[in-house]
Amino acid sequence: MLILRDTEQEIRRAAEIIKRGGLAAFPTETVYGLGADAFNARALARVFEVKGRPRFDPLIVHIASRSGLERVARLSVLSPARRALAEKCASAFWPGPLTLVLPKQPELPGLATAGLSTVAVRWPGHPAARTLIRLSAGAGKPGAVAAPSANPFGRLSPTRAEHVVEGLGEKIDCVIDGGPCPVGVESTVLDLASPRIAILRPGGVTREELETITGPIRPALDAGASGAEHGGQNAGEPDAAGPNAPGRLSPGTLKSHYAPLSPLVLHDEKEMAALPREQDGAYLFFSGKSRDAWAGRDRAGYGETGPDGDPAALVLSETGRVPEAAANLFEYLRRLDGPRPGRIHAEILPEEGLGAAINDRLRRAAEH
Ligand code: AMP
Ligand code: MG
Image 1 (cartoon, rainbow, N blue to C red):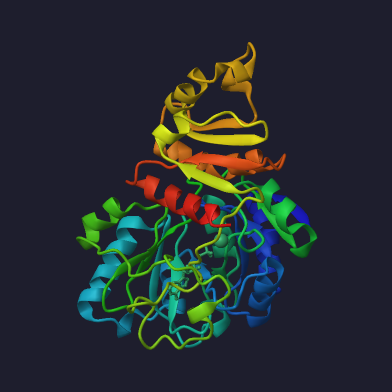
Image 2: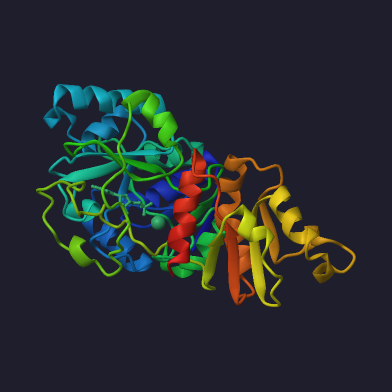
């Protein structure tokens, strides 16, 4: 696998790979994506294969222009009000970590959308991603790059090029190294194609931010709540009822996901502080304050240096800043998981803003 720098010249090489039907991993502001030409069914099939991703789990199609949006989504079939809402969301949050579920253009291969009549579309903000999508355009058509996260299915998402190399290695053609991803959790998926709009996955754009544009959004029925690990009710189902109909999960929104190899156990701040120090335990704290509350009652375990240099006790954000915690989440889970501790104990954040996206990932990781 080629490792490319994020210069225009090297991104062009990745774009050529995509145009020829290859697979190129690239940085976005959320996590690293594994990109393929969204209109090349064979390339899409390879994406599912190298990730071990079930075919019922639709991909997000990445665009970098208005014409790219129109090439993959059919806004004209939406009601005028819904269409206006889609336009408002796009202009408020694109480029950025928001994915919109919209009616699909018939020409887009069904493999990209797992056979659904809707497509998930995102216009990412990361400059390398935008350049790649732009340069992968061909024959007068704007670029459209289908890209799930660039990791084996179900495992921790990659937020650095090294994570991609570790997870997918020789199975893919190249990775563009753009350094760490600034947001660190996946995009928010907003369903605008169903009768009732819904957040199908919390992510980089917060519910609070979205609601300034959409008004109150009611919680999605069942979203991820009752696990469909092996396809279950989602597999091959027609979507006539819409992805948000009662009892229906967002396809691919699985109860167990984003999982480290060691078992993960979740606790609130108070429970964390009261945890005994286990010989083979690992600890992920939200803030320095939480870590200190825990370390204070169990200082003996540390010897003289205190907890700061302890590789088995990490703090997502020393000062308790949620965006910083999100950016560190997957990298720190990987670090703690590396020596395969008996258990990883992780602190749940306050359920607001980006905290909701972090907690969502932690809960799914703990289902493993
Ligand atoms: P990722 O695994 O980050 O690529 O995210 C893709 C996720 O977006 C899927 O697992 C689904 O939960 C959601 N998604 C993609 N396409 C659709 C769609 N057409 N309808 C509803 N949800 C979708
Ligand atoms: Mg993923």
